[in-house]
Length: 553
Image: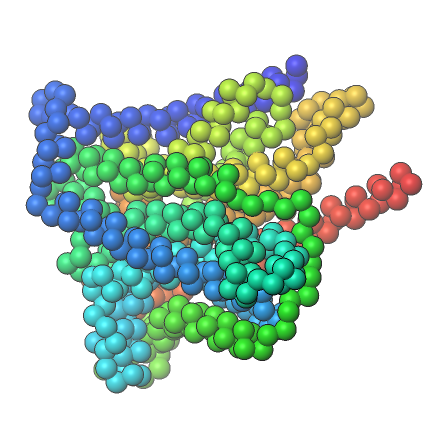
């Protein structure tokens, strides 16, 4: 009973938090979309948006570019994952692929556009190297390149993880039955991965459809829904009603995506046992996939080279003398340096509070005996936060908290990040806690310990590596997000990503790249530290288990 009382208290805190910072803001968006002149109920905003010039075209553009990007990204991610799991290339090369593939995650998407401009533009670094401009960077081409680079790490992570759980023994069985190499490939790799491939496609589609950072810099005349929403809300004449309608339209593909993902879960193949086998020798296969992976990663990462060049050039591309002046100027500019400190503070507090909330939610659903209805509420919250784009959450907060003490404050930015990224950390924690021994709390209670002591002394040490991973996830995402905070950051509460957007108007690209490098190196150092701590935690936990087993024997 005591345990349930404490669990119910955690549930109550979570329910109040998400009621105030998720349910109320989203209801306000819905109400605002139906509010006409004089606060009367009206469909005028829907009529104005849906029949307005360019909106349906922007919607079609968003769907088209998102489908094309998701398709290309899923294929490229599959090739990278296949190279790691089904070739005999060296371990170091495979390690390099796995690390290089996720590097773009550590940068804000708004930086991608500027990297494309300075790499492939008329005066771009790669244009100078090739002697001509390879393609027109504004519009469809620039968005396609930016979206593929942006979503490749996510698709690769999903497919690479799933491929590690495929039982390779079935390849031997297939060969013994006389199947052709193509049949073996289809039956033992593609079919078991169909659910994951579809998930990767839908997830990348969703990310492309809702992203604002890349269209903000290279969208050009190819208007998408995210840029329409930004224009409606922060244009010369803001229109809150129309903005609310556009926000709700952005949610529709998200809801459809999540629904399809749940349907696809039953198609995921699960093996009772994964048996490691030696991969069949194939020099042609290894060379082909090794080369393909190298080309993919080089093409993906080459556009970021310019970030390490332009800030150290006096005036690109006219005065090519090496200088530290631009970097020095950023650190001497109190405002720019202050923005970096703001971002660090927001990321740390987001990670700290977000990890605690995710852990609390996972304890309710994975380590308690409360009713299934309460558990479903937490799962539903995670599902909803995964469905709503960051721009929509930011817009909802703008509606609700304008004129309150929370307007343009750091607490509201932190809360926005926590709500926006809640789903993945919660699921990570829930999966980790579900795998632990279910009788720990009962055993501890029989020994006289209360539930809280058991959580602190037994469960938390065993969940420490996952807690660190969750902390890392929140930290990195809080450092790179722009869509979630673009509407709610003020002049005094700017973070790096919103400052980059402001610097764009003044063409201060040296400062943009220096700030982007600061984000990159901060995230690299943070991830390295968190991964090191997580490995140490796993080792210490394993030693405890080994000692306990030895003592019992």
